[in-house]
Image (tube, rainbow, N blue to C red; front, top):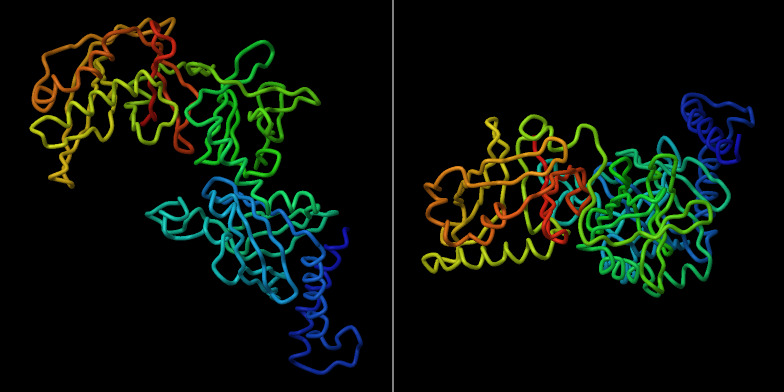
Length: 444
């Protein structure tokens, strides 16, 4: 039994004796002055918080997704100075707030004024990035019960959402680096390094796709394993290890000079490389075999898909700008949906809006026949019928997109690409121009 567990059992006994002492006097020394004993336990906990002369680095992985790191420096006066990787502002601007220790069911650390640690729990979804419908933010915590002390690490459990928090004592050099903007620097550099990039690693002489989302604070490898992460000084601290075949990776490291991420297999550095096009994930069954059954549609929301090819985005922008000239009304594309129809056709549906009617939208349906090679997953699309309705109205304005869709062969496959957390992504990979592709979120 470790020392902290012994203290916890003592604490539990003290709580019980408070009830006994409230009912009757007892001259047994074991039952004497429980308030004094509880105060002593809380004093030990505060001494523990203050024992990190250069502060702590805490990490939390909320139930609602993502991971966050926090620099914490406690004072004896109930103040705490804080930085966080929640965003670049919180990573650079030191914020002072307050904390207190309280005897609840367990000794509990409470951050009792609004601070960076409250941001993931903020019910305002525009702040926390959580669900707007539930108003629970990312289901994070800001009250934590002590659970264990192991060396320079203190472990906690959130009192409401039961999220784990871990605090590790910082060295003076690490603390000075964080206070000097070290976390902000890695966020800024990593954003440039990976945003809009298709990533992979070489394992067993094979290109294995890697997804690494900066906004989503999540990463995955080969479609087999994924994890939330938090930024730390030397890379990304993972909530759970990434596994691929016989490989297990417990951290994603950052090379600050040449600015790239890498994994470690023992002492061997495996660089995360950039590919000109997405790499199909090896899955069973293959995506092209379950279109229209497992997956009925695929949404291409250009604003939220960071890795779309430059060629596709150029054609999208051309079509969008041209659509805006229709009646000089400033119409614009909101998103595109591919509908995988039961009869084997595919509807290329463009959803667009008119700024003069902000609550209204219009769908233009372009229906294509699909000639699909069942062995390779390569398909070619030809217009099935003359467009009607809204499609007829906007047809000549969006030819950059509709002609692109029918002008090449596309390999259809699951891919790893930048998309909202938890999304399954389908890619259409141009077989004529390998640097050209589009993808979207698959929907059932």
